[in-house]
Structures are given as C-alpha cells and as structure tokens.
Image (cartoon, rainbow, N blue to C red; front, side):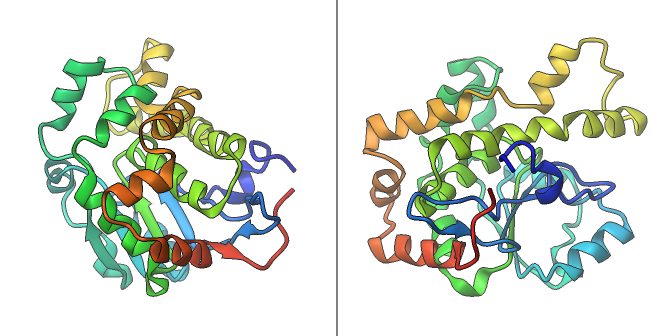
Length: 257
C-alpha cells in the first residue's frame, strides 16, 4: 500500500479537529519503520467536542507541543491538554509579528523559501522541540499548529528525515494534508469561521499545501547546513539527541508497504 493510498489508515477522523494523523509505518532506508501510535501531527485542538476529547484521551497522549504564535494560542482559548492529562508545551518557531515580516519577504503564498525563512526566528524553540523528541517520556505526543500543515509540516519532515525516511515518502506525507482540506473548509463555512469559498484556488492556498514546498525546504537545508542534522547541530542539538530521537521514533515492526 502506498503512502498516499493509506491516508485512511493513518488519518484520525475527529469530527472537530482537522489534519490529525499518525506518521507511523513509514519505512526507513535501513529497513526499519517509524512506530505507530507514537508521533501524531495535527491542526489546532480547541474546537474538539466532548467525544473528540474523549477519543484523544483514550489514545494515551502524554505530551502536546503547540507551535502556534503566542497571539494565535491566546485567541483560541483554553487548550484541552490538561483536560486529557497531557503535558502542554508551547514552542512557537515564529514570534508574534513574524508572519507579516515573512509576507513582506516572500509573499503570502506558502513556499519552501518561506519555510526556510522560519529558521531566522526558530533556533531556540527548534532546539527545545527536538530535545522533547529525544526524551522517551514525551511519547505518545501530538505536534500541532493552527492548520497542522506548515510549521507542523516542517518539523515533521525534519523528524522523519532524522528517522531515516526516504525523501519521496516525506514529501508524500506532507501532501496528505490536502486530503482533509475540503472537510475542514466545509466545517469552517458552516460555522461562520470563513466566508463561503467562491474561489477554490484561494481555499487551496489557505487550507492546503503546494506539494513541492517541503522538497524546496529540505533542499535549502542541504545547501545551507548540510541537511537536517547540520541545521539542528547549529542550534545546539547533539549526536546523542539525534540517536535518541531515532530510538524513540523507530519500531521493530515491519514497515507499511
């Protein structure tokens, strides 16, 4: 089964949370696989209703890492982490005001160049985030931002690269975001969060991802830092951290095919 075709297997269809999925099962270049039920990526969690929160509690999540800017997190109200008994860590790679600066530099459209711009702000919290991934007590964990596609997509791509997942699979995982976009837009329209979308291209821009963006980002890391490991070393992550992250993410089970 291919990475794209297995969307239903890894997607957790919460009724009021979008783009929530397990990155388990991906094969690595050394014949291992990412463990199921260890690392989940998602959009914001505050809209979850009681049944959604109960389901999340039943998944045994121990840590939730919130990548949203401070103003975004404040605007959404009380985070459900404490309610489900999970540790909450707020580690925004972008400070308030950074999005406007990125718009001025790269335009509003999502792109790999814009993702690389994140790194101008992100050093301290990127180091802290990957230290969390190196701690076995953190798992199972959820990493999320507002849409679960850009900041979450960048950090997840970096984690999968450290785990030894092939670039083509990392790019395909990134593109899976687009499989949940229509459902998300429909709920937002029905609940008055956005105006009814008359322009499908604009909806895709706001709620989806351009497939090529994560490859451009990873290529940029290769060119500037010698890859993901090189970047993380530049912000203070050690070889021991990287080894621990691999141990925490990888399973002994056969990879998903």
